[in-house]
Amino acid sequence: MSEPTGKYSITMPRDIAEAAKARGGPSGMSAYVAAAVARQIERDNLNELIQVAEAEHGPISDEEVQALRDQLHQARRQQSQGGANAA
Picture 1 (cartoon, one colour):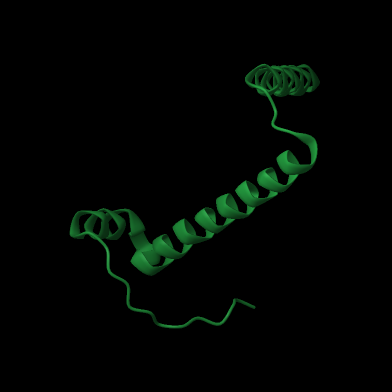
Picture 2 (cartoon, one colour):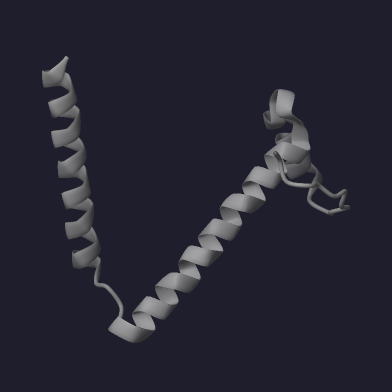
Protein backbone atom coordinates (compact mmCIF):
# COMPACT_ATOMS: atom_id res chain seq x y z
CA MET A 1 0.00 0.00 0.00
CA SER A 2 1.36 3.42 -0.88
CA GLU A 3 1.72 6.30 1.51
CA PRO A 4 -1.12 8.80 1.74
CA THR A 5 -0.47 11.93 -0.26
CA GLY A 6 -1.31 15.58 0.19
CA LYS A 7 -1.49 18.46 -2.20
CA TYR A 8 1.01 21.27 -1.60
CA SER A 9 1.84 24.52 -3.28
CA ILE A 10 5.53 25.28 -3.78
CA THR A 11 7.42 28.05 -5.49
CA MET A 12 10.49 27.38 -7.61
CA PRO A 13 12.28 29.01 -10.51
CA ARG A 14 10.40 28.49 -13.75
CA ASP A 15 13.36 26.87 -15.55
CA ILE A 16 13.71 24.26 -12.79
CA ALA A 17 9.96 23.57 -12.88
CA GLU A 18 10.03 23.11 -16.66
CA ALA A 19 13.02 20.76 -16.43
CA ALA A 20 11.23 18.74 -13.73
CA LYS A 21 8.10 18.53 -15.91
CA ALA A 22 10.14 17.39 -18.89
CA ARG A 23 11.99 14.74 -16.85
CA GLY A 24 8.94 13.61 -14.91
CA GLY A 25 7.82 11.46 -17.81
CA PRO A 26 4.78 9.24 -17.33
CA SER A 27 5.01 9.50 -13.54
CA GLY A 28 4.64 13.27 -13.75
CA MET A 29 6.20 16.24 -12.05
CA SER A 30 4.84 15.41 -8.61
CA ALA A 31 6.57 12.01 -8.53
CA TYR A 32 9.79 13.55 -9.82
CA VAL A 33 9.78 16.31 -7.20
CA ALA A 34 8.82 13.86 -4.42
CA ALA A 35 11.77 11.61 -5.36
CA ALA A 36 14.14 14.60 -5.39
CA VAL A 37 12.93 15.75 -1.98
CA ALA A 38 13.27 12.19 -0.61
CA ARG A 39 16.89 12.08 -1.85
CA GLN A 40 17.60 15.44 -0.22
CA ILE A 41 16.15 14.21 3.09
CA GLU A 42 18.41 11.13 2.87
CA ARG A 43 21.41 13.39 2.29
CA ASP A 44 20.43 15.66 5.18
CA ASN A 45 20.06 12.62 7.47
CA LEU A 46 23.44 11.28 6.35
CA ASN A 47 25.09 14.66 6.95
CA GLU A 48 23.61 14.75 10.46
CA LEU A 49 24.96 11.24 11.11
CA ILE A 50 28.40 12.29 9.85
CA GLN A 51 28.38 15.34 12.14
CA VAL A 52 27.53 13.18 15.15
CA ALA A 53 30.23 10.62 14.26
CA GLU A 54 32.85 13.32 13.69
CA ALA A 55 31.95 15.01 16.98
CA GLU A 56 32.48 11.69 18.75
CA HIS A 57 35.46 10.29 16.80
CA GLY A 58 36.97 13.28 15.00
CA PRO A 59 36.90 14.05 11.28
CA ILE A 60 38.06 11.51 8.72
CA SER A 61 40.99 12.61 6.58
CA ASP A 62 41.01 12.79 2.79
CA GLU A 63 43.55 9.97 2.79
CA GLU A 64 41.23 7.75 4.85
CA VAL A 65 38.34 8.52 2.49
CA GLN A 66 40.48 7.63 -0.53
CA ALA A 67 41.67 4.40 1.09
CA LEU A 68 38.06 3.37 1.71
CA ARG A 69 37.11 4.29 -1.88
CA ASP A 70 40.00 2.15 -3.12
CA GLN A 71 38.78 -0.78 -1.02
CA LEU A 72 35.27 -0.37 -2.41
CA HIS A 73 36.51 -0.25 -6.02
CA GLN A 74 38.65 -3.32 -5.43
CA ALA A 75 35.70 -5.22 -3.92
CA ARG A 76 33.52 -4.25 -6.90
CA ARG A 77 36.21 -5.42 -9.35
CA GLN A 78 36.54 -8.72 -7.53
CA GLN A 79 32.76 -9.13 -7.47
CA SER A 80 32.40 -8.44 -11.21
CA GLN A 81 35.30 -10.78 -12.03
CA GLY A 82 33.78 -13.49 -9.85
CA GLY A 83 30.43 -13.07 -11.56
CA ALA A 84 32.07 -13.28 -14.99
CA ASN A 85 33.98 -16.42 -13.99
CA ALA A 86 30.83 -18.10 -12.70
CA ALA A 87 29.00 -17.62 -16.03
